[in-house]
Image 1 (cartoon, helix red, strand yellow):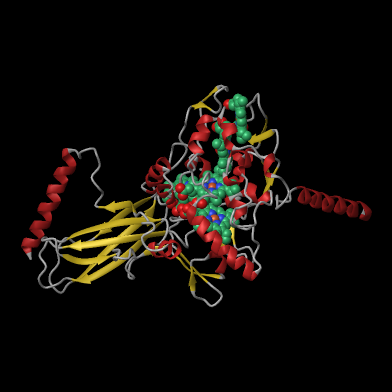
Image 2: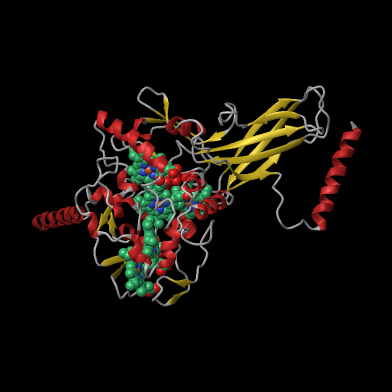
Length: 456
Ligand code: HEC
Ligand code: HEC
Ligand code: HEC
Ligand code: HEC
Ligand code: HEC
């Protein structure tokens, strides 16, 4: 009995060890870059996928000037503090990393295929993953391309089907980032999704980011390959999120436009405010923000850089400003009293830092979870000379980085970070005109409030 148990234990242990050893993540020098095909080769038969991917932040993951500026800063810190020099490249130029073309971090040894960032043959050579975060992919480049379609046949390459390509965990390889030394969570889009109702409902990253539906799966009939059969659905490769800054500067207009559309499908505002007040009254305004469309927190990703904030303006009947929060000053800085949703990292001395590699703890994180609402409260004293009725306007803004940070990196005047309006109250005019019922209700409300004022 005892010896059988021992044998089983040995077998189990050996099994675990063997499977573990077989799934070591690919690392520096495991491959050469000529083992991977340039994306232009795939475009011969996969023209649509290529056209969609081309210009995406995946295709620009290495050439992105914002990333490059931060990478060079990381390079100097890595040298001084003994941090792994290839860390950023695992996700931003995975072929450059596994072919040991990086370091040097100036990219002078990178081949053309490595400069394509997160590209076709890299993504379709992932045979397995060791888990979530910090890019634990196991690559098997060569004739076989991995995908999710069991019945696909190609004249030019082998195909292996792997359910994993249809799961969020595939994206989770790179969309969760931990500090390379102290393991602090730096970005956790996958975890935010995993803990959300979307995970329970089976709405994956692919459903929102690889189909025409922004807030869920939508069919895209067509062909996956020009020489292949017609399919009821073909996954798209735009991989659009929220980047309307770098896409704009790099001339990727299609992806910039789509990013704005994504941002405008993510949130809703609800405002509770009085329409009149007496001089000296304490006027209270509540703004509710709901994450209605994103399968993760808003904002998500590198949220030490991203900024989402509320601008609230209250005016009297003559257009005089009674209250204003969330305005930008002449330098493009958000006023210090505003509600800003983002993450603030602290360095070893507890001071705020925007450099993820200096982060040792999280000072604050007030982002909004999927399908959750938060309510912000504002108040002011009604001035003597103000005239009723008063009107309230709220806007939820987003930008990819603080103007200050971009000025610091590239010099003042180099780039103007665009501000995108995600949602507004009252809602901006829609193209369709409201029916009589709504206009009627509006008049009734207006009359109602006039009557209330007359009664005082
Ligand atoms: C000569 C034409 C041709 C070229 C070149 C080509 N493919 Fe394909 N590929 C096909 C055809 C045909 C299919 C099958 C499509 C179908 O059944 O709908 C296919 C299927 C695939 C699939 C499977 C899709 C799935 O869901 O399982 C993947 C992944 C793929 N190709 C990746 C690539 C990559 C990456 C490259 C470039 C390195 C490439 N292909 C180059 C013709 C080609
Ligand atoms: C090899 C790592 C890697 C994998 C795997 C990966 N990504 Fe990314 N992804 C990146 C990097 C790096 C960026 C940021 C590039 C940049 O901005 O410089 C990015 C950016 C994005 C963006 C943001 C674009 C924008 O407009 O803001 C979206 C959306 C996205 N990825 C979706 C996905 C989805 C969906 C999957 C899974 C099917 C996936 N990614 C798999 C590395 C990866
Ligand atoms: C970030 C990784 C990533 C990149 C980059 C990428 N793909 Fe894909 N691709 C995927 C995933 C994941 C799927 C499967 C989606 C699913 O089934 O949910 C897929 C699906 C496909 C399919 C099958 C589509 C279908 O529905 O039948 C083809 C063909 C394909 N990719 C080709 C390409 C080509 C060509 C490129 C480069 C232009 C490319 N891919 C770039 C991850 C990627
Ligand atoms: C229900 C739809 C939905 C699902 C599911 C979803 N996303 Fe998103 N995603 C969005 C929308 C809408 C936006 C734009 C608003 C925002 O920035 O969050 C977005 C934005 C993004 C961004 C850009 C964030 C930024 O500010 O730079 C990334 C990266 C991203 N998604 C990756 C993912 C990954 C990875 C998954 C799966 C773990 C995923 N998304 C699941 C809808 C979705
Ligand atoms: C585990 C994968 C991973 C690693 C490692 C990684 N990144 Fe990223 N990086 C991403 C993803 C995914 C995004 C996109 C998230 C989003 O849209 O907010 C991103 C976005 C960025 C952006 C924003 C780019 C833009 O266009 O707005 C910068 C800058 C950046 N990374 C710098 C770095 C630096 C510097 C390092 C190394 C210290 C690094 N990254 C390491 C995955 C990674």
